Length: 231
Image (tube, rainbow, N blue to C red):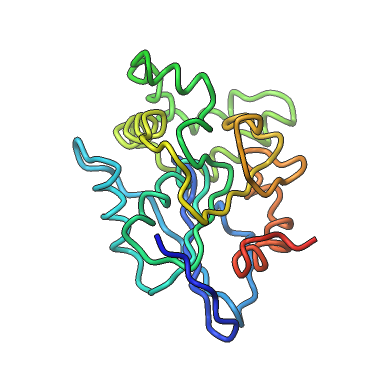
């Protein structure tokens, strides 16, 4: 994935891929200067039976309509964009709340992979996501349930099973050169202690692209253009 220098006077096309089971509305509050950037939102496809991650990435690439783009992925979407990038020429590859290689997966995911436990995960519970809000109690849980109901709309069990299996069995030993990784130090899905070489968001959780959108609106333009966060 060659990464080219940006030309300041061109419109930069930025493609966003949401996290596992999430719809593109997770990016609804992300704003980039319109005189510099144009945002494009990617959506999950339902995987074909026995489709590999490589085959899925190639299908996703059919939705890329511009050359030399910036590709940004969140969580499992970050893994998918890394696979997509192998067949594209990019200006910048950015992942958020994700991992760059297998050793950054939390120990519990690596254990589940080694023991073949993914098939025992109760992914069918996502069929009942509409009931979460009714069952939640307390202000915090009610707010979190509303977030899940709003943003987690891809509840096809075959997709979720496929995504989780490909996430915990991801075969990537080394990070892609030039990749930019943004990670919160309070991420519980991909704990910060396993992450190396990232731009740290203090107090950022796994859903920080939603609840810390002001941080991204402030810093993403410079990260896209330079690969670094301006202080």
